[in-house]
Image 1 (cartoon, rainbow, N blue to C red):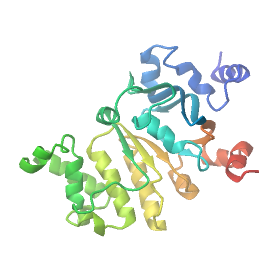
Image 2 (image 1 turned 180 degrees about the vertical axis):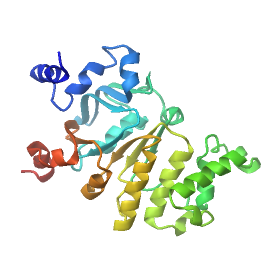
Image 3 (image 1 turned 180 degrees about the horizontal axis):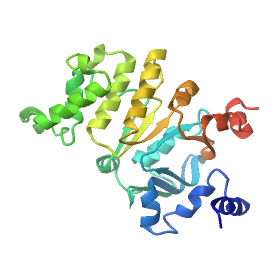
Image 4 (image 1 turned 90 degrees about the horizontal axis):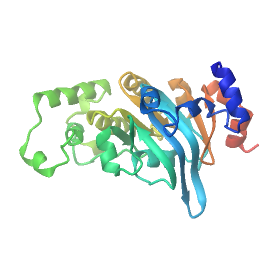
Length: 280
């Protein structure tokens, strides 16, 4: 049976067309080697409810190794909540989250981060009173231990790593400037840099273009595309011009469900997607 025939059969069985291609990789049904070789992240029967409202309801969905996936959707679609579930910030009501070949559903948020899932929230999380360089020092693995920070200097290798990242994100000339003096866009880049220093396998980036100038938006898109050469990224975004510049596969969430997937051009021609966004 061809892939197209399989998808058609699964749609007939009541599986949404947008999810049919994930059906054959469900961890509950296939060996780990089958799904883990293709997907770094996979969720199955994942849902979470708040006071009776189901904020996320996804039967199965995955992110492939080395992929840059953009998740879009109207306000309240469940985009940030999905990231909360993946990162361990919010426990699911039902279902499982699988990452890098392991079931991480019941793991603590801090342990999940140590496994290699890094997250940048919509508002940049940086330390205003520290310099750009010092912010990245603090982001080094194990550097959160206050004793290490008091008594241990960074190694030459760590210094080279930080300086390499500063060059990559165009912040080298601001290395000794306190973070509070940086523009909003540069604070976004600093927050992303702090993620990279911790060497994650998967980056969850929430609305990186929010509040940026046109030039900063272009530079941030270019930065994410550069990072995608070495990392798997999931980008949550509202700015369609930014999404268009990334030019990557798009997943549309609506009312907690995966509504559609494909290129941005395909989504703009999808009547269901347009109705979800425009309410018509």
